[in-house]
Image (tube, rainbow, N blue to C red; front, side, top):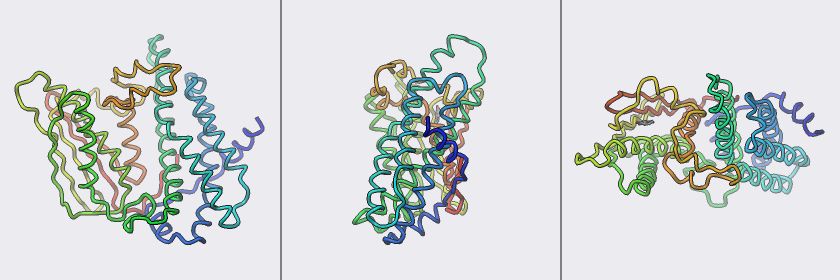
Length: 360
Ligand code: W6P
């Protein structure tokens, strides 16, 4: 209870965003002095950001805060807040080293926040379906958007600090930023992973064609791009695969085009999976709506729905979270569909790395 006072105090402090450019400039020089400055910054910034989320987790509508899975996430946030606040002032490299261990452990503690929150939402949905009143999900949706966007930022900051400690880093990498990332390479890998998953689930996977300049590179975080393209290709493969089951026709390939513009790098992913009705488009990005039949396998008592993480349907949070990854560095994700034909996803990645972190 005493800790809540401190949480409220820290939760009202200003958050300080950083830019991709700043992270690159700062991180390209991992001297002891900079490592110390970085740790000192995180020692203040992380409790501020974590306190805000803890407060929001306590005050969710429709009783979401009381769902067991959400309580568990709230406890992770409070534990991390305590860990950070109980750490002494960082004065020398020995403090820095120990602090780095703490934030590494915090990152691991929060590894399963996304599936656990998905479980919390599911626990809420169970009772909401019972009373069929037209519920307004806007507030919960907007909370989850803020919550997951903040999580991306927190993990990016911790990840950057941890990567700076690497003894033999890739010369083209600054922390988890690849200064010469080839979107074509990352896309190829994401396609391979998505097709492998499709193959496991259906015993077959549609072809994917890809157009783009193989020599084009720009600074970005490969793991973020992989996550987004993997999610989109998975959706397309599933749509095509399900439309062409028991069909003599060969499935039309998913087509990907990578365009390098001045402002944006845009990746278009087109499928002929039959499309979705216009009225269904907004639902694609909502957390409370999900078609995943496999979700029913989730058990209240099981820690996580292990089975679900390996199916293509996932938790149904993949698209909204992919859009947050795009937005985190100033990009966006749009989906257009022609019902009866297919769907196009436009993934815009911002090239000018000086857009500041959006801080919810
Ligand atoms: C579909 C539905 C969808 C969502 C996102 C990306 C691609 C696709 N294709 O049929």
